[in-house]
Length: 140
Image (cartoon, rainbow, N blue to C red):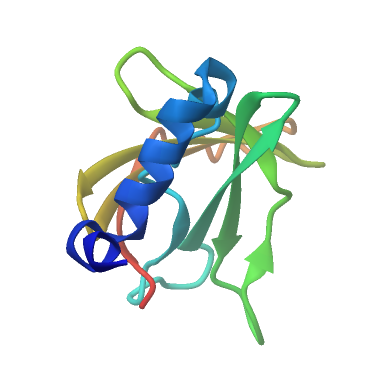
């Protein structure tokens, strides 16, 4: 039990996954997992991102759910499966009625995430503004 206090739970989980074989390692912890917030979000800006990992038939599946500043409470976008790009970033597309919302997530530091958001509209509104960049902090 003393070694648990020294090395912590994450070391124990990593050790257990390594001893359990390759399928368990495929479902290991994702460093971006958790809830990340943009405390200074204005109306229609990205207010938070929730990243969760699930193990489905021995494969790790990462989900991203985004929240946009709305009133009286934030608007939720659907939980969407994400891909891990070769660059290490996570990438997901929220398919919505009026637009596709492309979300690219990169880890800046232990407690900071950089999120790129691009909305591609299906109607003629012409609001395509390219990538918007947000810095989010891990929720305490």
